[in-house]
Image 1 (spheres, rainbow, N blue to C red):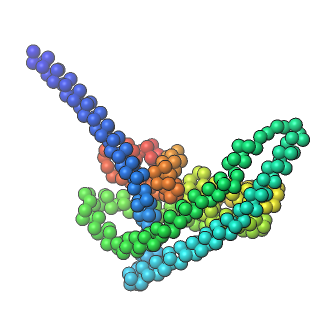
Image 2: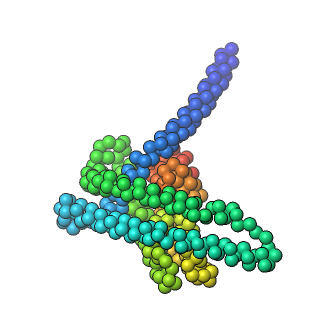
Image 3: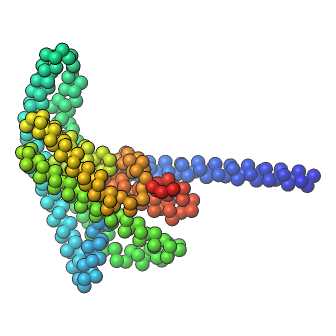
Length: 354
């Protein structure tokens, strides 16, 4: 009788443990859904904060370096902030002028595109190939092009409107750089282990941002030089587009090449457009597939599949800025998962190692 009671008690304990595990899983998934929904709803506030955080992360090493050289904190911060402000004003000026000039030339390109469609349709008809351009014309007709340009302008205008807020947040974040480690040591449990993990994460993140920025700058410089040599209009605009989209993993460089190739086709001829496409492939193959992985690839520790999935996920949650920050944000998630015993499995899934 005692054995039967003990067996029944054991079975009930196992069932209770299983039900608790199922309940915990459901609660965990529900919490994830709530957090993601909250991030998507609050993206207008969250995006400027994240941009400021990563600009501050990129600016912290030169600030600390100036302080180690004996420069007072206030003067070091003033130098770094002046540099950020100067780069921001230069980019805003170049982007604004290039977009304005491109909008002025847009009717000319629309007419050339219509002529190209007509000539191509006639050539195919002579060869006995019947092909309808109705669907393509509906996509690239002037109202559609104007709408697309308007959406891009609104996105840029939104970032410019938040530029001052982002700039202020970067200043206050940099003020906290020297005191933040001491604060964290007093807050977190097991400070030695946690601070070591945080230091590794900060080093990897800063390394990624610096190397990615330098690789994007090299890509933009080579794209500008190639387009200048070939005489393509708005070379500086396509170079800036290549710089920013190079931060988007996997597909950014492909998207950056499309408008430059199309403009070359409309402005010059198909042969030059082919050379532009081959030039983009060569530049991105050398920098993105050879040089950059050898310098930074092994230090990310993220699975290539996870990098691509994070691009889709963060782009859906935060919009275009989320695509730019997809890798750093996923690295942050992996750091949090590594520091929690209950989320170790998530860190393993995100890692490129078993």
